[in-house]
Length: 291
Length: 282
Image 1: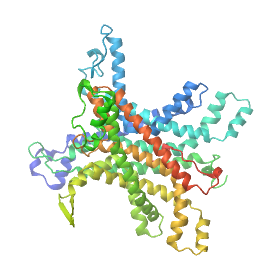
Image 2 (image 1 turned 45 degrees about the vertical axis):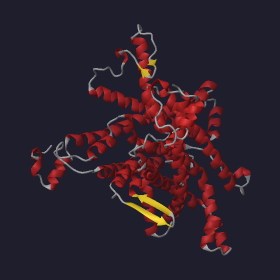
Image 3 (image 1 turned 135 degrees about the vertical axis):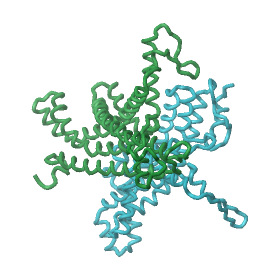
Image 4 (image 1 turned 30 degrees about the horizontal axis):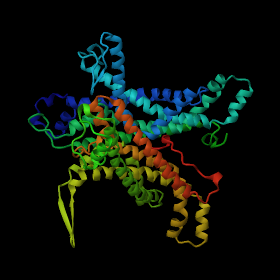
């Protein structure tokens, strides 16, 4: 990074630190923060979309759809999220490869689970064997995003379902009395008011989501936990220009501070947002200060 | 050869505690029974962590909740700081951080002789999951429960406290007989959520920094073992999920019974029902 870094033996303390913190591996650590932010940016809208679908499914006139919605919203209450984070990427990968195996290699009709092995033809592999590394990384990241979206979609579905029930019944009855169709009642009266009731719960889900991002590490993504472990471990002078002892305490302190700042800033931002959208609403928060 | 279900129960029922057959099932011989029993055996660890962390954390949380609502800054600020740090950061990182701290402790072995009883103690225990991870879980649940108790304490009706004062109850009796029962009653639905969330969070222990010893792990550790050995996630993980749903339902029933007891003096129509709502927690 800096020119004086080329000769690592003759560095003063501050220069040593500047060089140490800008090694290639440290740059990977900084980039992995972007991985966390990207995960949040992609997962949040997906989870809200899935949550809305789940909540609407629970109000469906069809019993099958209703019970699917109930199952989706209830599963995260009884099952630890970590089970989904381990299960979903593996299951998705096998399902996709199974479908591709059946479509791309129709000549192979044998079973894919042979004994205790999962065997598909090489054309069905995901990603394909000779793909460059970034394709493998991206594929792993997408599977992780799907797992996060499913789990946090279920959390959101719980919140949105509760919020839809909290919208005053009289509002909906009035809309119906004006002759609005069920679809119009939902789109023009019910849903717009749902969000204000859902916001406190969704804020909470956002905080849970932030605190779940280090679990990316368990899905084989090279995230900030991976790099903190990697960089913090003892480095001997034989393999590193910057030998040091066990520094994992410092690296994990750094991660703690990062997450504390992130949740703290989020909390302030969400408080402002809640205050802003509550103004003029027919809720306790909206009625405050007189209108 | 494959085992019968009864043989599997004998061999693996207490495997997570290091008892029974040492070698785990391998290869083509893995049966459904073995998976159900071994994953169920791992559940002992989840229950161990959850029960002890909740039991110890309950008292720490009560103290922290009281400290946080104190007028004295020297009591209030440390409690508020503790709650902020443990609620604001991921439990997963807390495991890694505390493990790194505990590993760097000096290694001291001590023993204490009380008559014929000799008690050994070693700081090495801190780096083992049964103690080190338990400490992290205790601190974590204390922070979350403290926030719940702090909120409930602020909702205790002022009139109740005034009436207790008018009757001449001294401060300690006022707290024990008036404030605390009401605080618990108000906090209980949220505390039930916390208990279930903590029970689910115990699955993180053997996936964070704490090592397993002789393949004695929790339910998810064995589910993960089977999924890796059989290359099939569609059996082992649903079994683990089923075990967790079962225990969660039992937990809800237990906490519901306590809730009914705490509300026994309230008219049935005005009671607050315990409803597990994950979105309002953590």
